[in-house]
Length: 131
Image 1 (cartoon, rainbow, N blue to C red):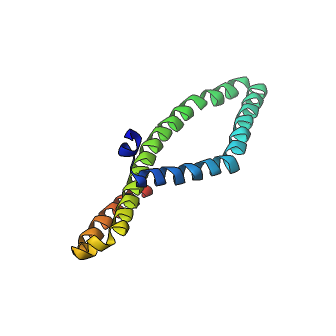
Image 2 (cartoon, helix red, strand yellow; image 1 turned 60 degrees about the horizontal axis):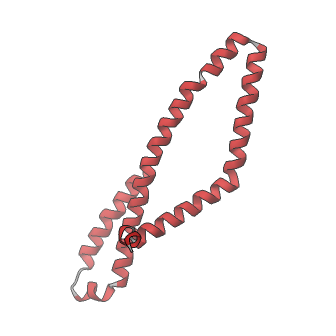
Image 3 (cartoon, one colour; image 1 turned 90 degrees about the vertical axis):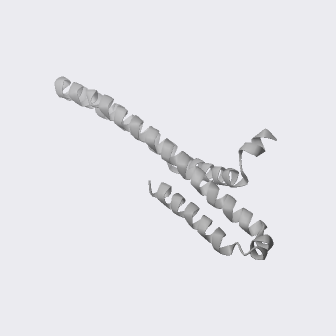
């Protein structure tokens, strides 16, 4: 019960669709690309060191700043991904609540207020998705 109180239906739907899409991308392209990239980096590093030790050492040493740059990008991407996931969950929740309660919405003339709320949530999602 605690889990369902913390996670709204929109958040669960958003999480499952984005996670399934990420898993699909990983299985289709990600693993093969990761292996090829690692093998290429090792091969190029060994070849550079073999051809010219000094220049190769400089090139291999440049991997450290590059790694740090990639890690900082990954951290930022994780933060943006979480914000994006939360924003789409809010849009889904608002949509589902409005559609499930369409009769009370019409009875109390809340169409314009709901449209305005939905527009705000949608703009927030659009901004975070752009990030």
